[in-house]
Amino acid sequence: MARVQAASFEDRLTLVEHLDELRSRLIFSAVALLVVAAACFWQNHAILDIANTPLPDGTEPITLSPTEPFLTTITVVFYSAILITLPLLLYQIYAFILPALSPHEKKTILPMLLMVPVLFILGVVFAYFVVVPAAIKFLLNFNDDQFSTQIRAREYYSFFSLSLISVGVLFQIPVGILAVTRLGIVTPQTLAKNRRYAILIIAVVAMLLPGTDPITMLLSMAPLVFLFEFSLILARWLGRADEPEAPSEAVKEEVADVARDAEAIPGDAKDALAKPEQDDRKDDDDHLG
Picture (spheres, helix red, strand yellow):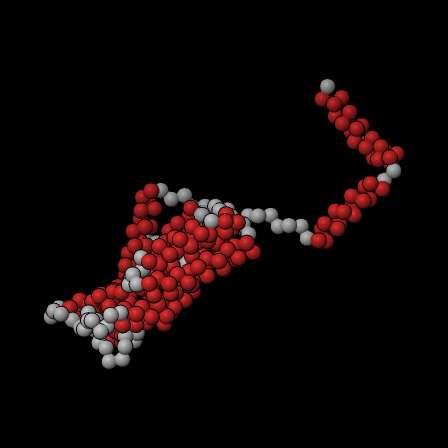
């Protein structure tokens, strides 16, 4: 198999080499996903117990066909493998596009990549302990005197897994905002001026999350709005990556002292200082002539 090491910015790969590298990274990602999936299948009972924790005490999901327990377990294993290997998959994407990034862009983006797994884990933890339990409680108690509610395993585990993955991905908002502001694509002031549109987009995205109930929407929307506002503050503080640094107070004072000293020079002295330069220019003109 071809190399899976990241190429440098100076490397100039042909189309065939790019495709070969893409193939290698896809194979590496698939193998990693299968290995993690095998480990998750080995521990599927523990994973199912973790997934059942948000359910009310004594509630167990039901299956309606002989094949559903096996197929549902495979689905949970697959979602769990994606959840665990997602940081590695994101790194493979970054390593593939690395040759297209200049050293300055890599220096800007690398710290943000370190934020990706941290924010993803925070999003998953928030969804597990806050979003999913509140959504399950609301949905099971809604008109509970009119229905005999039973939880189907396949639908519940899909809802549970997609909720964790979706909230984990949405917690990447600070990474996206810092990327576009540090690279100079848009300014924090522009984002702040149009924050009402950003909040509207966040509301729409939260509404599309698994569950579609108002509790899930509000609980998901609140931290996303907070992350958006926090990202704006952080973007203002950091500024653009290529923005020149403001001169320090010491440099400003030194420049002011030089300017004052220049003003204090008498007029005759200034003429005397300027005369050698004029003579040099005259000699150069005579030489060229």
